[in-house]
Image (cartoon, rainbow, N blue to C red):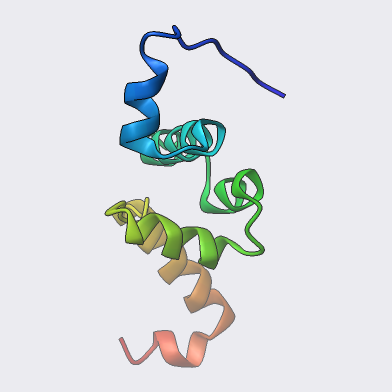
Length: 93
């Protein structure tokens, strides 16, 4: 468990901005930043937020305007892995 203190004078403004459950709001903000900065994977975000799959985490992130962490290197690696698994398809490309 992680906890932090918010100055009492700031708490009402945070509650107005983020709703009554500041613990959840902070957890979600941490998840977004950790994913955005590639410190957590979608699977780890799912675990952090209590979601069942990384697909659900990706959908949750997308609803908040956060795109996939998927680089050109990731695409090449996926292409190479698929070409090894399905060589008959790789010859067509």
